Image (cartoon, rainbow, N blue to C red; front, side, top):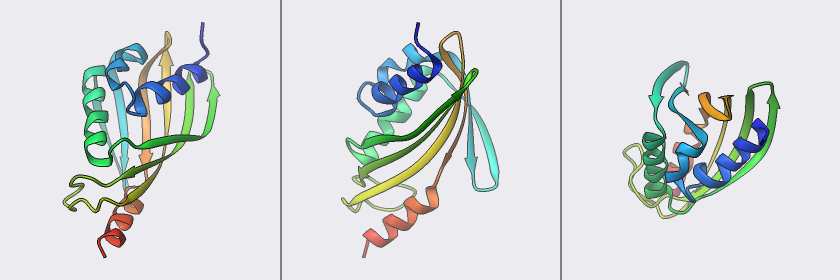
Length: 140
């Protein structure tokens, strides 16, 4: 039986990395509460494994075959914290900005809650302002 930390590490290697997003159901419950921090507000949506796989495929469409590196991984009880660095090429429109075909780095973090070895809820923060600023610089 894998630890929660091992499950999340595998989730990043297999699904979040874009390698095999269709395997999301291996790691996720049928319904997952996804709390997304957007500036000063929080939006909660319900994700299914299929919906999450589609989300990752959209990321591949925008950022190409991006690389993701776990920079920190901590666990306590049923929660696992992950901070990552994602590097991709801006190959499609993002937030109204045309593709620059240049590298963009995203820094993000999330806390995943697991029950019965499946992700049931997560809280995610991504430095979207830094992504937009890189895109603006890359347009020059």
